[in-house]
Length: 204
Image (cartoon, rainbow, N blue to C red; front, side):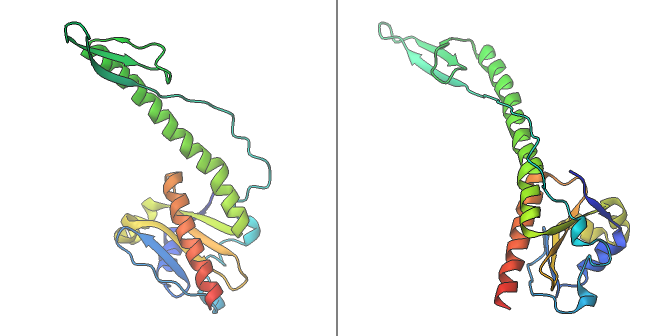
């Protein structure tokens, strides 16, 4: 999935027009209203709705399965009460066996690596399926900001920028986002801002 690049000046200009969009950042408050002035429609001069990132074909995400399971327990012998450290890496505990503390920690390391893979799987699904479907459904034009260039123009804006959305009078949206943004963070920002703008537009 690709995105349209926007210059630092364009993103900075967008952020200076709160009447047409909703910024989302670490220290910014939400402000929303529907744009009625064509001059204030952020992104119009940058890209048309037809150039937005859309999911027009079935997802090509490969099937993938990752399992992470670890059970550890201190058990006491029924005869002499001796404690035993046991562990299993199967959901049904079919491989339950006595282990040393070092062996258990080694299993923890293995499972943690698999959990990282599961986390990556969530990001891949968000980037390859959920975000494109959301973009297509709401007719969103996505513009990725060059954060290094933006920082030279406005370091404070670059530091706090998570997302910036604008609703155009024609009914389509423009969404500004940092380049290289984590897909889960982008999806959360996009959903929050776009749905908020849509609600505000419906009430206008």
